[in-house]
Image (cartoon, rainbow, N blue to C red; front, side, top):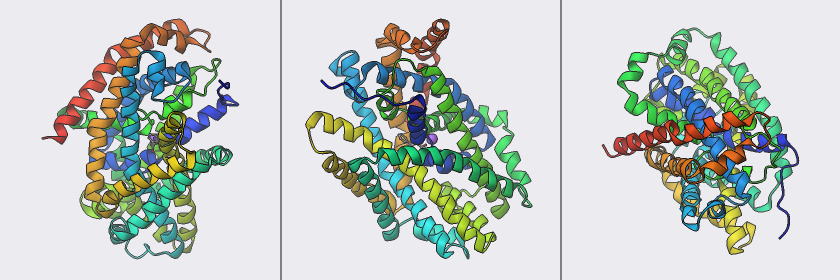
Length: 440
Ligand code: PHE
Ligand code: NA
């Protein structure tokens, strides 16, 4: 058997993982969930969840991937027993489910590049969102986004992806900082910072049952967990890499982009609406599009150029995430069933396009797909992974996580303790609350 490829450099792995992690989850979903789930209270719980649950969980996926050195489904067989491949299979399924509507939002972003160039949304941003987010136009742009995603996965322009990611993260940060500063200068932004940054702990206590599951699932979604992506990427990792160092860096970068996006979107919403629009603009889902579009409209001609650049960079972020979602299933199917890469990528891309037309037709469908992912699929998939790595694979996982670190011993034991106890409990509670929330 041929020697398996590894990442040329440590930075190659980090960039790919960050490219997968940083996406619509940070720039679109995080501000939108923040606006509907209680503002700073949500932000606070999210930060705790990302650090205390997200980080140990991402390390668990790294362990499985690097140790098994194979795709995200067979990894569980190679490490333990064929029965455990259901965990990997559920991850694949969750990723496909999510990609079906992720692509719809990717289509909106693409639509907004065009809309920025022509100034089409300048007159009435909220109404514009309502028009282009649903129906035939949304389906067409969803199709375009999915086709490009499948095309890249089919023909593999890996160099391009790596270069794009290298540029993408700094440019996203620069643009978001610029917009955040601009928003800060506007009248009426003050109330937004109160809403976004000053958590009301009484509110958290009263609403634990909804804030916790949303925040924890948001951390999973945002860190690309429970979908095989991080297992796949870590499978190409060499033994001299510190999983803990890499994982921490990825969690910090990913969180920073989300926080920055909120610093843009929430103030812009308050400036326009005096509050966060729940029902306005198609619910929270339109928050990013309506608020940022209004800011560009206010800037006139310069706003057109800025809009093209901004939504262009968001599109690259969305694409690099979508690619990693489709890549997980494609590499598995190509490895195991011997289908060609293009046929597999376009086959799944086509099927997911069809499934996603529901979400593109009406945002109510998109909301339903999203709540099933958040409430059930993501926490269930992560829960099974955590049980596997903590209780089934346990001691060997400790051995794996110590590699590449000099003082790994006590840290590795603490990590194993965490995944066996409170991380597992936290994910279980998230799943329980998510399920009861959906079926209430
Ligand atoms: N983490 C990505 C985002 O925040 C979404 C994603 C999930 C990508 C899972 C790949 C795998 O947008
Ligand atoms: Na993310």
